[in-house]
Amino acid sequence: MTKNKSEEEYRQEQIEQIMRLKAERNAVIIVHNYQRDEIQDIADISGDSLALSRAAVRTDAKVIIFCGVYFMAESASILNPDKMVLLPVREAGCPMADMVNPEKLLALKKEYPDAAVVCYVNSSAEVKAVSDICCTSSNAIEIVRAMKEKRIIFIPDKNLGMWVQRYVPDKEIILWKGFCPTHIRVTAEDVLKAKEGFPNSEFVAHPECNPEVLDLADHVCSTAGMFKYVKSSNTKRFLIGTESGMLHKLRKENPDKEFLLPSSKLICANMKLTTLGWIAHSLQELVYEVKLPEETRKKACRSLKRMLEVTKESAGAAIAGY
Ligand code: 13P
Ligand code: SF4
Image (cartoon, rainbow, N blue to C red; front, side):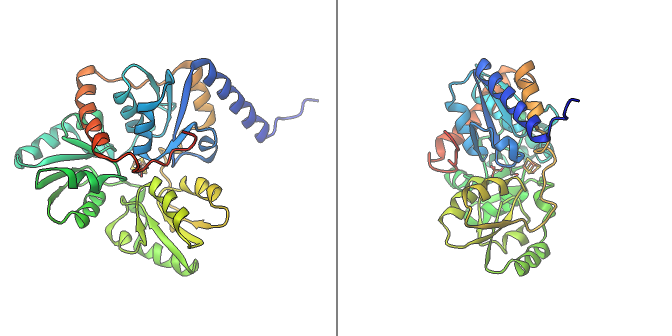
């Protein structure tokens, strides 16, 4: 009688297959902090959007397996035209990135000809191509401050734009009306209730949350910023105001500390599409390649590279195993 494989045996087999194919293909596995736990565990490099953009520039591997959402793999491809960048699940997109397009942006630029466009990396290559500079949640304040223009069109996340405006009052920020469908789900009421049930905790939030939620935060930062903050704090309990995937590494790196989400709705369905099976498939078949027309790539690359030049090396650099 043949014994059914246990889930764990099956998982181990998948991991072995991935490791074998990774070596054969000379590939690197780059993983965003919101990915499933088991994907984070096989990462060569993990981090926030900024750290992953930097890692994509530095890698010597021939193939980049990007475990995240489309705009992240696209940024890696823009910065690495000679490498093969693969997104294991073609449908893994970011709804916020789809909330702005070049036509609408160009129309707004006409209304404000003196403004510079600062474009959050959660956007398409076509939109980056008609922007002046990119930013991530790690460096948005620094980038807006560095612009010589007094007026800034900030796209597409209105919450991040409003957050930046608090710190850069001498500039006028024209907001786009985009938002993250995951982060806006957490309410101030959720946070207050969660704090009550989790005494002596600090609330750390991502700037994509609504302003009234950010008002309750002890610290607001990118996902990489959260790892740094938690490590440096003497507090033992943290409410984490961002996507659920963050809990895995936070718990692993800080076994003496406790972490909870203020809402069970903090799950980005797109980030969870990638599985070990899809990564093995991606390496086996070399799919799905993210490649752009050269003209768009070059223009988008200018905005991304300008961001990387402005941002100091230290910002957002929580890169595991790199
Ligand atoms: P980070 O750059 O902070 O990792 O955020 C990316 C993102 O998509 C947040 O929803
Ligand atoms: Fe996009 Fe929000 Fe998911 Fe981040 S969490 S990838 S902004 S939908």
